[in-house]
Image (cartoon, rainbow, N blue to C red):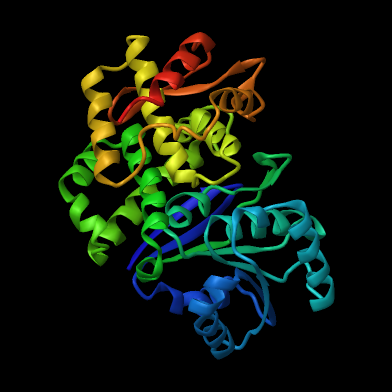
Length: 363
């Protein structure tokens, strides 16, 4: 088991990573001083896998667990589902000290966090992420949001959790596509911040894909640590934290233009390659570095080109409506070399469109 801490909003919260961490949920809530009712939010798939174990753990620690179970899918991350959850919290009799436990992937985590941030002006939140993407990315840093009007995460807030409990053994249940989806964020984090970790991924990708527990614990802990270190320096996303958006400017555009038929990680994977080619074209990064990144993404089984069914004009339109617009200019995160990245707002849209169109033909 690996334990680390994140300092945000004047509070220190703990992240526990390792096989069997799910059994710590009750003890962690007791350590935090909670008692009585705990509301667990999850989806139907995750409830079938881990709901009984979490309920048993909470009951054994003296809690009275209540469950809100939603259907699976990105479409649940919306104001309508949030409204349903407000109603359930009313029925349960939740109070301002009632913790919400987000048990599931990024959709459950973002949605639960949004509800926790807005109900009674803020309820305690504990993340128990069960997907790789949630363990290394969405559960860390306090960004919570829902989608609206075909745009991703455009209604949200900052609401830091009280704790994060990441059980790496839960990753054994992930479908292959979902596991690889999370690997995109692992590779992204290494690419922008830690070239040594990038080399580890190049050397050990076979063990990672085989879901070796030692490898999983390492990639989750290291990737989470990278994000935590950035968030601690820039909690509200006004400067350094922008580097975490590497691949996301184009990636979110692709994700929206595909009506979310492409997973977040798949879209970001393509977005990283497009951003890499933009950096090379602007003379910021060497083509060899971009090729190393592209090769690792291919080995991880991730897409590196835009599917033909995704309309390029729709991608550009979605990019220009994204929250990464600042004073009418798109912010792009570009690699200078593996392990280092810069944020630029001077990327010509002609170059973006040209590189995007070329990416349809990249094998």
